[in-house]
Length: 61
Image (cartoon, rainbow, N blue to C red; front, side):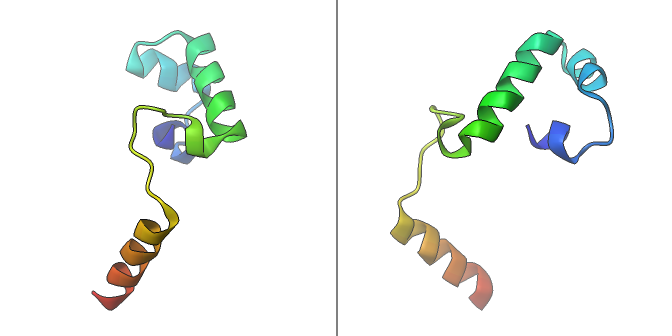
């Protein structure tokens, strides 16, 4: 999704480069935009405390 969102390329171009069907990429993007936290259920979710710790560590480095 980052490639698609940050690219100046069209959805069609990105789909072709990745070798996926345009409608799949469209549906993935739609799902991602509507519910970013749960868009990729296989990715581990960080709880709020861990997110805060990561933010503090990144500002102290």
